[in-house]
Image (tube, helix red, strand yellow):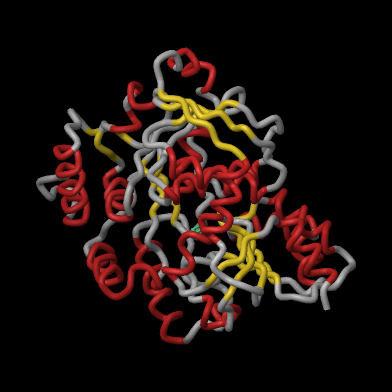
Length: 390
Ligand code: F3S
């Protein structure tokens, strides 16, 4: 591949992986079970990113491992849903066409593990999108470094990644024990807890405490926040994550920190940048089927008095459609949006200056990336208030 015998895109990708491998002291490359590529929204990568992808696609780049892609900047089947301009839509379609040429799966989601990209425990993968990386490492027990958009694309086009970082057993051992000294009562609590851990811990935390068994939605939103406020890519949670039993034996000489309710409240204050919200935005990371089911049951037969935008993947959308969840949400006045997200779509073009969300990751990125301020609230509370207020 490096000599160009399998085409210029594979050679260029291999040169990048070789450089990364050398920089990190990797002794060899390994095959990956899958890749997940970020940097799909035109809002994020702009003309430079589009030009790079087009050159790679024109030169016949093809994925050599199962590859899924992150959210785009709009819903592909209905760009007008969020008031997206014609120019933006055209650029976005050009990006998607590149990935179609690469033979990637057009999943447009940050939850690839809910859309057919399902590595097994111990499988090496090359994923970008920090919320997906922390999920695949911690909850599934596969191994991925925190790839960037170019390196995950390079792994997609070669089927390889350098053997370093979280692919090595010794780097998966915990170096900090975190005791949770507060109940986590809501999805927002899980998100705040993740955010605080991401700020406090460098390395691999081992979490003890937290009486309740988290739901999929809570564990997703926790990991996304932990990966947003710091550089965490892996955690172990006692009696919860698959490698926790194995790595509990390494806790004797590690640093110890605790997190209490006051720190969660403090993070809440720091992340709250907006006042009264123009819309409730849920789905950072993308909503799962069970989360959409919960929203549907809360609003079924009622009428929302404030705009509600629910973000999910096209695959989960189809399942939710069959179960009647999408219909219930729409009849109540809410919208369910596929393929994009509240941070990478130009939300202000649809008149949203302040959004209410349960996601600390969205609260962290939205003000800078799409200029939207944030008010934080847990999902149930947001919806119940939206049903009450006139
Ligand atoms: Fe996903 Fe967008 Fe949040 S990619 S994790 S919904 S910022």
